[in-house]
Image (cartoon, rainbow over all chains, first blue to last red):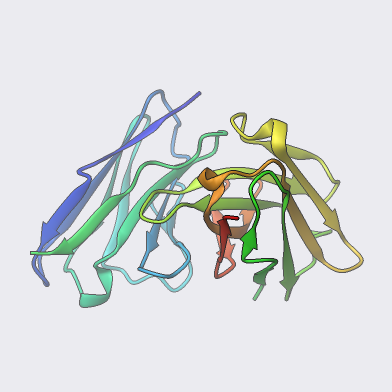
Length: 105
Length: 121
């Protein structure tokens, strides 16, 4: 069973600053990682898949990188609507990380 | 663009069976390289995968819920369903249905808005 661990649990950032979120897999998953954004009261929204490919309609300020066991989601300059919870997901039967909440500093 | 919508009772009594349906529009559940999933989220907590079904009717379930879960599909109505038996307060959550690509990362690219199910007498 592959487990995803996200860090930090909470990230406090000012609008306009860069945010860097991390997801670590308990064993190698190649590039098979996705990232989601979940705003309060909404369903998750797909941001990134295959570690670094932006989903349709996702702004360029969101970027993903990594392979193997270590992955990063970077938001280059935080907009007000980016304050949310972010989850990573991999393809096995325990797919989601625990989430990182990005809140306003 | 495919859209998913959950429907079902918002209140279920303890020990009873929770039943939800996901109605799919803008795409057929019988075609395309997709799985059709149920995922839940207790208030203030993270996402928990429940299980999925494919166009051929094959299912796969979270091992921690497997003894209580049944996912089925009705291609004639373009919908799929979740049944969770012997519910307790721990099953209180927002339940989402979602489409999942079969290849590569198998990302969940379309989600329903979610429906809150409360288990209480």
